[in-house]
Length: 423
Ligand SMILES: *Cc1c(COP(=O)(O)O)cnc(C)c1O
Ligand SMILES: [Zn+2]
Image 1 (tube, protein in one colour):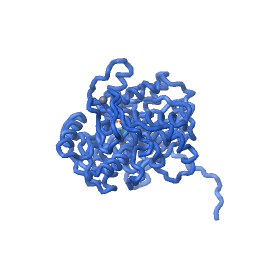
Image 2 (cartoon, rainbow, N blue to C red):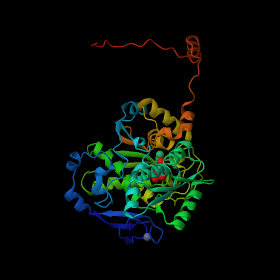
Image 3 (cartoon, helix red, strand yellow):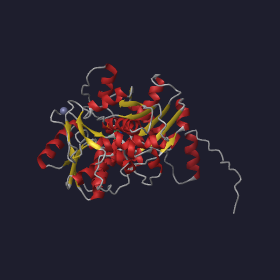
Image 4 (cartoon, rainbow, N blue to C red):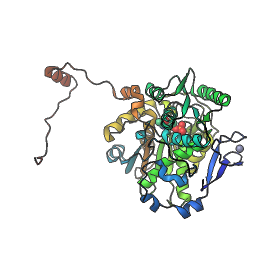
């Protein structure tokens, strides 16, 4: 790993060699991978990327902690689209908004970025089995990416995990342990099992390589914006690994001279489960909270990466904003109706937060904002229907259709078309 210097504890500063099965510091602190930015700057520039035809997260290899000889895993992860969302921006009264749809990754969430990296590191460690606990998406992404690479998986999820995500796990051939308890209970059981059987550990925050995979989302956003930093990047926060990774990517680009300005982060949590944002808002140390939100992916009462996440929000002069479940469901409809993007509840929470931050005057309407949709709506169809309702049901008959329209006040106008040239 030409550009990796090692790993450093964010709590006590102790340094470690970057071995593939690195976990946490002996003090319990989370490790952070360190790079030689001067060397990256010397060898690698936006020009190289402009000439690169690898349309995946692996186009950023100099910024990734993998051995030169390691080949990327089979599934295509990353290079998700960044849409300019003018219609939605107009409805929100915001100058410029972009939507990064990370629900278009192979297992339909941003977690694929971390799991792809975990698969490479597990292979480098010579492991044949990987395990994790997850609210759902880390699990399904690990299961899929590991299946494609021929590795076995043991996956621990809380019993509340949405059916779509559990179906993915089963289809990808994982051994699934559905834990009758909270995410906290699930995490603790997985930890004990990993300790007992020695599987490669893909638990959020424990494994410092995962954030390095996640950071490719901001590397991409900035490349897609031609290295012009937006004012804000908004995303939902659960354990805090994603926002910490997003910030790491931005800082990497800044340190390597790819950008000359750092965006501010908008950290969005659910009102019913916002331990990290509450710490930001009150200036007090974080405290556990109940997991009281329908956005299962961010229903994290005991965040696993509080230090890195709080540091990222603070260092970016970020904005912390909480949204209700109603606001999350409303953002699902809004993104779908205005942009054709269908996110799961935690997937659209960032966008709900942008709307709320504007309403609260926390960000200026003149801003340029990128909102990351972190997971696809098809993973959690039940909440999609909850957000948008059931369709009308009619007998296969024109009179029945007319009656159903009349009952709902729908007056379809005859479609007008421009003259089109016929062949
Ligand atoms: C995991 C996840 C998040 C939050 O990421 P953390 O690292 O837990 O903060 C947000 N949205 C979706 C869809 C996720 O799967
Ligand atoms: Zn330490």
